[in-house]
Image (cartoon, rainbow, N blue to C red):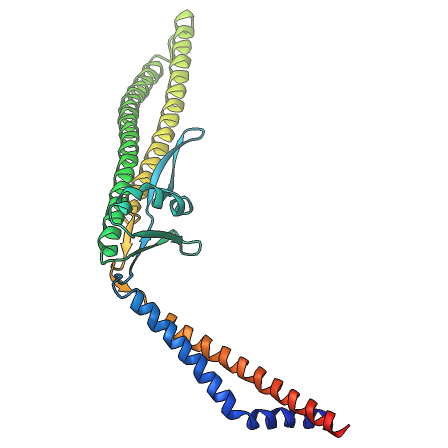
Length: 305
């Protein structure tokens, strides 16, 4: 511990002894850094300022018909957000090239269906170009969503026609069943009135007719039950499809916030150069100070010998 304390004290003693040298070297290096920064600024004084515009987009959804045992629907993104990261710069490259010095970067925000579009340019055109690209993308997605809704509504109209036809069939079957039951009742009353008649071939014919009428009534009721179940299934599908279409209105692709131009802060780069120059000067000055101390101690040790 004592040796370490002495060594640490020696370090501070050397630093204090060479403080003038250390300060001068740091100031010289910092001055060199300032000079480099001024030279860079003077050489680029005629260059335009770099501007940046940022837009955040929420990707919408559309409906899709999926063939299963019947036909069902599913809701999916109009375009996959992960794919859009790669395709947007390529799709709108013609618009980017119209303004020299423009550069577009697209990033996905986490796992959300949201994209951050960053446009950089040497002039103030970043905001205008990015706004045009965003408007074009929203219009394309709006058309794609409407096309999917048109196909979906056509399918719903087919279901509605089928439901009406099934309802008409049910009405006809209900009327027919009611008529058969009425005839059955009348025939039973007729048999009841003539029940004292001696049984014979006529009675057997009446019994067979009554059995046939009863079986037809049972078949008609079974058919009516199946038709009602089919109609309920159609109405359930229509209700679910209408709910799906109603929710789609909330899922359109849209711009979150506003697009505004901002200048890229170059002050940080200048300060960074100055700080690096100062740190380099400190390291260099410490090296020189300890190296000079080492030379002095070496000369002293030789003289003592």
